[in-house]
Image 1: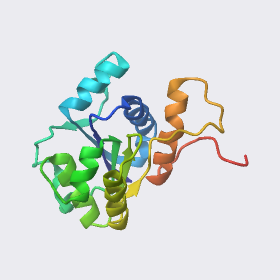
Image 2 (image 1 turned 180 degrees about the vertical axis):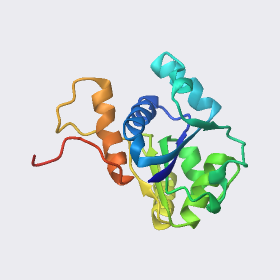
Image 3 (image 1 turned 90 degrees about the vertical axis):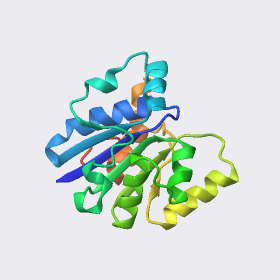
Length: 185
């Protein structure tokens, strides 16, 4: 069983977070705890991109961005996996710099120091050298950078299916069961 933190930042790509939350709930038998942190910008971007505030209707435990009493703000909370989706370059930079000024960056710091799984779904294009160096720093610290770069092998026909090509990869990286397109099958 896994204890998972999903952090949603204000980068473009709310569809990725929505598809991930739906897929995580579909495998809830494999998840002991599912906690979500959203930035105020993430809520605004979600409303702009998806035209709704459905983020509030998912049956998960929500924590405020400044709630340092959240169980995953400490290694003793024993959360296995943190997924930041979409991950803004500002958030990525603060994590790379060791700046724990909110619950998202503190939780990422905890996950890295405890040698657990941090998956950052980077959402930016193009990358500048600072972004690349920050990605390198997080990778060297044990994190996984999974750019929000969809694949098209499965011939997706909707925006949700396109987003699912990235989300399914994230689910694989998190070690969760997922029925998805597999190359060679």
